[in-house]
Length: 426
Image (cartoon, one colour):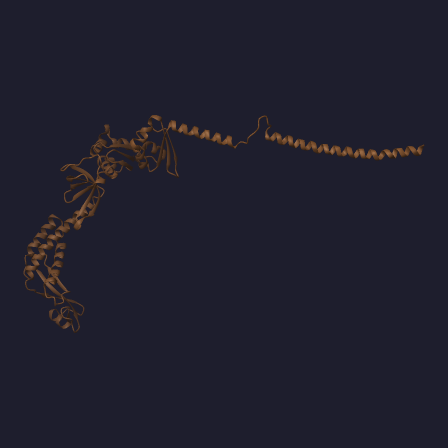
């Protein structure tokens, strides 16, 4: 069949493959499928055209339309099958079950094919570019990107990222920042989604804690190289962040490395965050030491931890209480998020008052539990002893009385006998 301008498209496909990386095979395959549909839509509806096949030469651009027919031994179904005898007239090597491609030359198909080819190639180019952009930014998920602000209406900020647009919703913006059109800003790639008609959409954030993490990785070579680890981050966007760092190498000061000489390193990060305060602390496996450090800049006197409940009672000097808690509880809240512990902060005076109240309460409980004793009364044990002695005395008195009564009875019995004896003598 005549080239029908497809040759020009082949040249365009070659250029697209070199310049944009869109596979020529992908475009040719898509074009062949589109031409099969075009043929079915525009030609003989009475013919069985389910087995139509279109091929395009990737070099010359020549296009051919075939009817694929299966070789059968006898009684072939028209347009679907071909007898073995007919097939072997075309090629002696055909056997039953093989497929023979018989070329069809539909009238005016060249014009239709040319129109369809242009539409398909343009559509596939757009789809391929979208897919490539999606893959590229999907690989950048969790990374920092830079772009120019195209739109900023207070609720949403749209950034030009080159191949795609970045969208920063209100919740991903820093509350204290003002965004203006044509300003260049950095953002953290939070998510890459398919928007309307499959268009990729990049969700960008400046309020996410990992935005601070990535800025530290970018500014501090020791973190990027893995010599210093970021163990935890808590953040109140636009106001304050706390970051816990740790190094296995005893010769490396993780906090000092992050702050830099005269604070140069951390100042670059603070500038990017428009003045957001950053507390860098050293992570420690001992929760008491870690929690005390997390409450910086406040000084801590003591930390009592309950491992099972992940609860810590912190005692601070009286003049450090407001600093430890922070404005609207910010410092304590960020410390709790950073350590993942529940933290209760009390001043030295408050703790003393609590302890005194407990002692007073214990004394009152002891007093209420003792039995009431009348004035000048003897102790209970002494009373019991006296009762026992009295009982014994009573028993011994009764015994003596019984013995005396018995003796008197014996005496009374002996007296008449003596009298009788005297009478006999006389």
